[in-house]
Image (cartoon, rainbow, N blue to C red; front, side):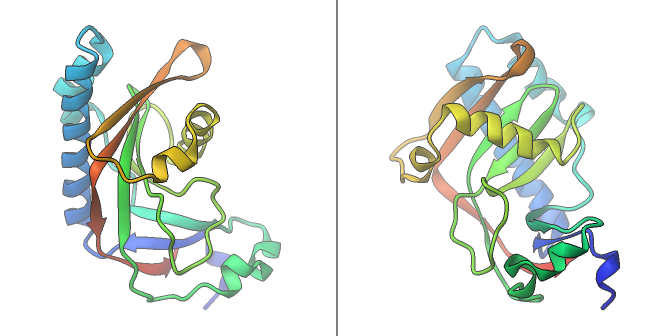
Length: 189
């Protein structure tokens, strides 16, 4: 294994196509719920209508446990040294964060068997004008205003939040009463 070629490590969906379909359907469901909740929001209405035409999947469906990049010091971190490649690990989805026109990110508040370095574990789901790495910024902004612990509580019905982002933009968070599980496996990429 050539460590210098590793960009990141994490949990990848075993069946990428199935994971895309699952996350697309979850996003569609979340948008339908949000459109009922925020009936006058034109951006949400447009997003639901144009979801297939405008938004694209990232190169892979995965939860990053450590971004390695070009930093050789990352190979010495516990998140890298304790990483168990080929370990089967389910991806657990608790909710969806949507920034219309920008990005959709699945929230994954689960205790995984591998160390995670992201403050807020998530799976980049669909891309609009933002890049996959921007889902970290979205999570950071959301959890400045929404308690991460609140999202970890089991809920009896779907819950909604509207979060003010920078430059007058909004994000919407839907926490699902039922968690979604996608079979995954730990890999280096």
